[in-house]
Image (cartoon, rainbow, N blue to C red):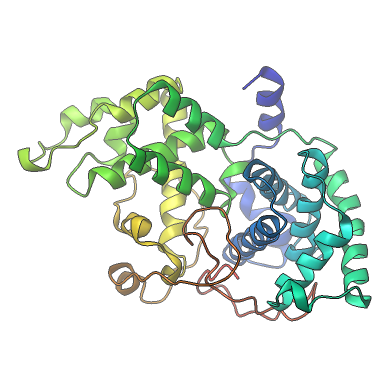
Amino acid sequence: MDDASVASNGRWLFSTSQLEQTPTSLDRSVHEEMYDRARGVEFLFRVGSHINMHLPGMFTAATWFHRFYMRYSMDDYHRQNVAASCIFLATKTEECGRKLRDVAKVVCAKVHNNSMDSVSDGKEVDEISRAILMTEEVLLEALCFDFVVDSPHFDLVSLFETYEVPQAVQDHALSIANDSYRTPLCVLYMPKTIAAACYILAHRLVDGPHSLSLDARVFPTLATASLPTPPTHQSNSPNASKAAVEFFRLDAADGQDVIDAMDILIEFYRHTDYQGLVDYLSDIILIEPPSNPSPRPSLYKQAPQSSQHAMQVSTVVNSGHATPESLHGSGTPFPMRTKTFGLDEDAGPGQLDLS
């Protein structure tokens, strides 16, 4: 990552306390805003996947989505309009050009949960096209024409190329990194911090419940002070997390950011509708969160009967178009319920169904 990229990313970082001071917070709780942000990014991923946009382009669009709502209210600009405009702008800046009308048709199909064959050139497609262009003007102003975005995936790949990392850990880390865009992590921490959080969390998943705690993995010196691990359950990667700390050159402050990022990810997974979790990520909701995260507001409302769901996770198979491999696997298991572009008829934020 060059100096210009670091400077650009740094300009767009906020504190967790500022999530309670966004324009949306004037009318909604932080729980409601994070709920709708997650669903907006899911919608963005669905549209991007259907037009065959490459993953870096979708991650750029998702980052813009979060940056936009640090400056504008979700009550003034509906999440689907903004998501569609982020995708359309990304088709131009990420060298994967698509016609406005083609994007509008996909948006129309996704809003109504219809097949593309049922969408025709008509009044609704015209209205969606105009809405995308009008929102794009505000998006450009919100971004200050700063299109530079780096993703944690680049840092993860660099780490994988430097060290021999088991394939399972690579898969888990990349999947968690995909899901990080459903949270506000991209406007809270630098990409290397998010990458380190995803990598260490992935190693903890692979090593199992009797391995080192998340705290000991970030601050390896803590491992020597912890209780000994039974010989039959020794961690397969006691030095792997230390290697990540060294690779990303994390100091004490950076390490605390990694702890805080993992804490947010675990909270997100625990409070998400667990019917959408794929088997290999279901154990993440059973991981003990870091013991000393920085004080911050709760971002996600407790889901009903979460502990019961956590112990009885099921995988939902759906024929919906694929989104980035993540907590929903290769499909999008929940049908769209919003009937009109720009209107929200969904239920409240008790659980994140990410429709």
